[in-house]
Image 1 (cartoon, helix red, strand yellow):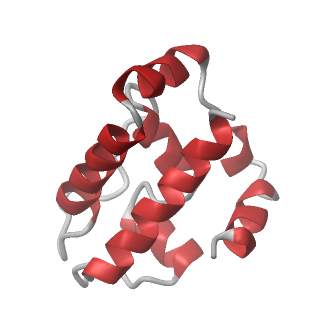
Image 2: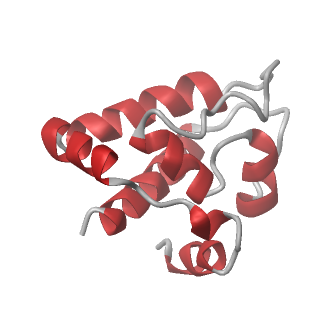
Image 3: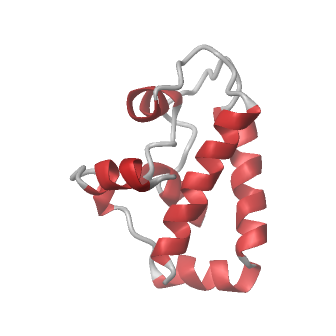
Amino acid sequence: MYEDIMTRLANSEFRSKFKLKEKEKEYIHKKGLDTIESHARDFISKRIAPELLPNDGKQTPMKGHPVFIAQHATATCCRKCIEKWHKFPKGKELTEQQQNYIIGLIMEWIKIQIL
């Protein structure tokens, strides 16, 4: 399902620079993938999905949680990047299906990183 976008992201010099460090990998192993996915769901629903985001482009830190790093790697860090890479328009609340797509992509990237 994500092969095409993962290939496109891997070919981006900027996106391909993001990697999980040992600290983040240990955190994932300690918490478990279900908890990490729950965090992703929470971050996306609150920081990305709303129709209007007053701090769009600045709402996702570059470090501090594996999901944040994954969001930058998968171009799901802000609505501008989501519109450019995933074609979900800005200024419109993300549907549940769109949120599930984003969360799935984030989790796919994380799983690849922890192999």
